[in-house]
Image (cartoon, rainbow, N blue to C red):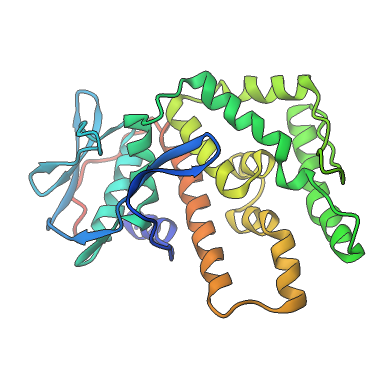
Length: 280
């Protein structure tokens, strides 16, 4: 049962990024996985080592791009990552393996950022948060933004006891220093692994507010993605969509947002489940 659930959540249609090290926007950078390679293993299993839980591909231990032992802090996360590897067919499609990529980034920390730097990068998104930038025209879009974005901003203000607001100015809203401090303190309660996942979700949705609503389980992945693409969806309703391209982008964004959110929760998961091979 757990295997099927993990597959449904983790797998999504995804474009093929070019091989390389960095992918992302701004300071939220991590590994960009290679595109594909032929599957070289038959069985996938997990085991517990001194540093945490490991992934076994037949009798080989999975390694990171920097050749470190691939070790994750919880068995639940190990199962989810192993499911990504077990779900690959004849060809390993790395660009669908978002959890593996996030773990590699957390383990290797290729940009060598500290916890404080991760928190500052996340909070900085408030300056350009999608749901805080509004239009005055066309009137229909302005009304749509108010109806769809105002409730999530109001939720965040109440949930964190902060002032956020919105603006139609190109300069964006004036975010009080106390609001930044509150979000910084809240993010500091997460460990380094979870912060990597939070920043990943933020860069996908272009919104700290939507990301926290998603991670706090206030909104679903589908709702968070819809709100992050509100203007694009408005234009699609008005002018139509490019055949397959818009649906493809939507599917990919949902897959990434879901994987990042799952990563945040599982990387600090402390419960242990029974060790098992990931084979029927």
